[in-house]
Length: 323
Image (cartoon, rainbow, N blue to C red; front, side, top):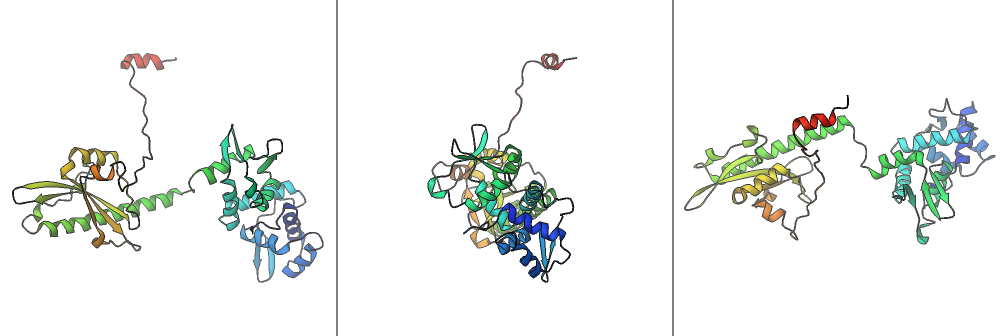
């Protein structure tokens, strides 16, 4: 079953037209008048309420933002419904985007050739998107195409990650920094207890003095014969998969000081508390985490790019002097 079963643009236009022109908007009255012209009243109403195009309050129905829409013009109605559908966060939007995720870029267009077993699965949402002119059908090639004017919709909602506001992103960064700093303090206390009173003064919160050091805490490792440095990079990690991000600078320092460098992975519980009993300490992490075929999955998700140095400064100046 699809949420879009029974929904078509004509039914939507009929209901919105009644709400736009009626003085009596009690649901029972609107439903009776609607049934004289169209089918699937409940499905159509549920759809319009879910996307925010209609308000259902105490048995009365009222349209939203229809002042500039000609309800007799299906093109205008379709544009209005599409804006409401894709601009909200309803389950209908989720199903529509789920269908569009089947499309992919081929031969300069975004297209979809459904396998035989999938043709009926998305028929309801597909048919509405075709009525809204988002999707077209090429009968000769038996493929569905995304209309070019909706490429940006596809990129923003399907091919890219979900939108993230700058305010929310900044709050996420602040929260992450707060958790990261708290994890460093937790490990600092842990290290002072681990080395004991005799060496506690050797434990230092390096990151407070130099954020570019490539590690957060300086400590020591002692044995019967010597006292060796212990450079600790602290990562507050997911309690499920211990995922963390390792900067290029940190990896370089870890490789340079391999036997002295340690990763301390501290799991974060649901309410921001730490699971000290699950603290994972990894000595020489480059040899462990970055080892091919090991237990860790690694992914490079950034590419650094810069123009190569070419010739002398004067030559570069002549190259760009077009005046």
